[in-house]
Image (tube, rainbow, N blue to C red; front, side, top):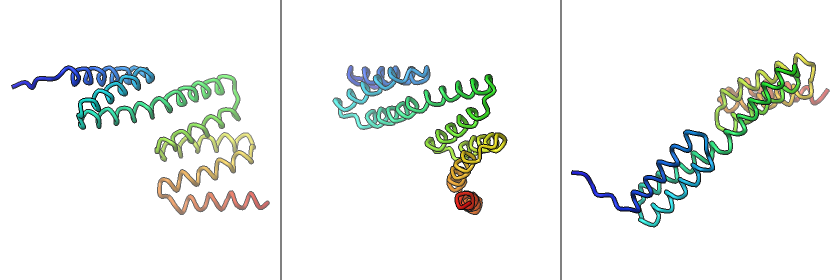
Length: 163
């Protein structure tokens, strides 16, 4: 037997589905507005299950809205740095990609990007930035529970700082 759905609940379901579609299309402002509407309707109808779903989707869309443009811009910057043969800029972009991955709680990806930044800094002889990157490397290693390697990185930075 099908359950009868009230108009408010149906409107909330439509808003939530609209948000889901907008999210899939990377239209984050529209997704956020739709999820907010779904949350408002769920609160008015005192539907805790729909409130919870709307809150989770709002949180996910908010995180994507903040990080997606950053990743897209950094990818464009990396392509431009490669195309114009600017290894220092390429290293800086890899460093920023590592920071973004770290903020997204992706320590393995952060470590991989940071490795690329370190290789570029080392190849160009930019030792100041290399050691800043090595300090970040220690943080990424710590986040992966690779404590001995993190400590070794910190000691290298400390030795450089004391020269």
